Image 1: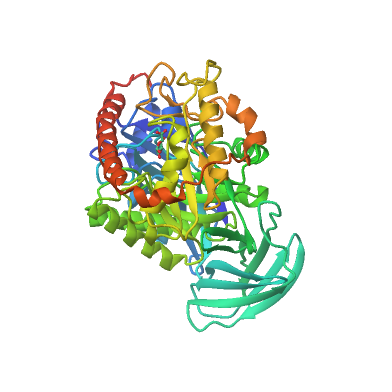
Image 2 (image 1 turned 90 degrees about the horizontal axis):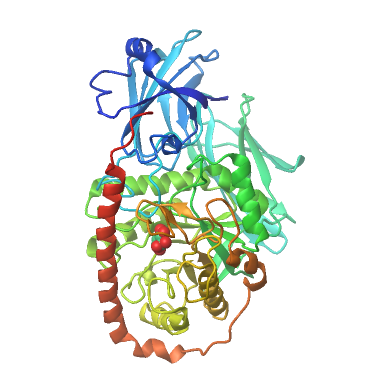
Length: 601
Ligand code: GCU
């Protein structure tokens, strides 16, 4: 059983970082100091609380709770956090339980029976810090707001010691049938039953007689209902040991994603992605977006005509994937290996590997997830970086050979590693950061050529322009809605006219907070959203349904890729300069967060 612990908790801002020294986690101290703790709602981002808007530091959370009976011989007790940013340390009833590093994925700790108090109060103490550090992922510089705290749900879980722990379901399809390849891990080797259902109708039943904890079984289905954005059919499989009425329930979709040459196929049909990027942020909630508002975002995105979302730049709450499965949206997921992290550190590599593994284990059975990305706009030219990234990709491939895996590149001509990934990606901002969208056609052909990536699908994973909502001017005026619309429309028409571009993702759905976006139009927000931070539709959002699939017949420029080598060196130099700009901006971010925060919290 799973018991929700979210709701009202006690909270303490550890401005002087002396909580551990003062043993704040001891029951006696929790009781003695309870009067100077504040109350906070979990899940929440602490920066959404007045006085902590810019707080980057340490906070403590306390929860006093009772547990239902626990059968110590046959059951195990876990504490489960769906997400807490960035580092989380846990104590229960004076006992140190453990530490989790990483701000965007679930983690759970098994609790020894001797640490638990049955039929009396249990004291949970949690220390969280959201301090940016060089050896963290992401590192010190990132273009999103550093929302801290326990911003997703917390549970305790009582599970049978003998259980079917997880099942990963691959699906191979043919015209009128499908083969389910079900990889499983069980905690005790004994036979188990499964029942496959669609809506509430039982399709078939079966039994597996395993001889090891890890294994695979196969299910063959005639005339399955495939999953796709237009037909989001969800199946359920229930599994239980023959001698137990504890059921493991898995929901999944029958679909197959494949790459053949320069095209992407879903269920053996060529598909193009019309996508948009999305940060996990909604003011005033920060990252702790209420389910109904998350659902509204996805329904609006679908209604605008998009069929894909890139969950920038980190794993979002799993509820987004459940919604995408049901609404019918394709998802590109990513871990926050973003810009410059410490690619030289084996510890950082291990952390990145754990992040991609945890992401794949969490989301494996979501049919909406079709790609994994192990990083964004990383300095792939550097030896340490591409060694780190290529090793990460091969590690991820071993866990999930069924989905394309890549990193997202911002290099036009200095990235010679696209040839090693399943898909080719490119973030470009022509018309906004450099040159004009009119140069796009030429540059895209040159990039494709220089990257020696003719025979794989390309995705423009980011393109965009800033606009302050309701600021109107001509199409040349930066931050006007008209300029944003003209750049996006021209870019979309060019992408749609190239059959080797299998998809694109606008940067970004909604304006979002960012520490170093502070000119008079931005006021602390990155304004590239097609809707404002208050969900007001900008001009481009109103035009999109009409232009989403429009093409612009352009000159092919196919010969250009051969003649582009000298440009390659020039653009590599240009990107070195842009990197320098990023480093300078990181100083701004440091200053922003280190501002003296108000102490009236
Ligand atoms: C980059 C980066 C985004 C950033 C965007 C921008 O491509 O991937 O995280 O927000 O550009 O500059 O707005």
